Length: 155
Image 1 (cartoon, helix red, strand yellow):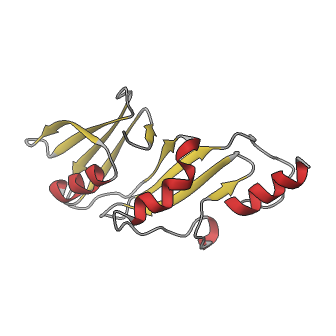
Image 2 (cartoon, helix red, strand yellow):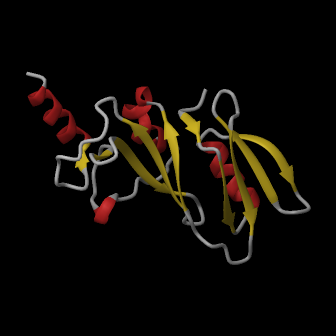
């Protein structure tokens, strides 16, 4: 079972199909179809394979950003999951460096950022049970700051 619940569909360009296939399998995606002739691989996500990502080999790939939706129960495991696979955690919003997921109060979500081998910026994103908070001025908080804020509210 993977921690990625999925997205509907997206396509990313990569320089080396085989090397990139190794990366996406390392983060738990399941190969659906390898089209060697078109230098493209399709990966299925989630327990029911309701989402798909296509990686296509290009000489000069255009880099993109994509967020994988993860279940809230896997929030605490996002960073260790990546570190166990030797995948570097990237700074979040405005270069903020954190050792925990970053919360976007206006969205009610927590995220961890990382790159694939080509530099496509990827994100694990979990929706938080407290929901969005438009009354917080900061664009982001650390997860512990968010949790402390909600502990104080619930007292």
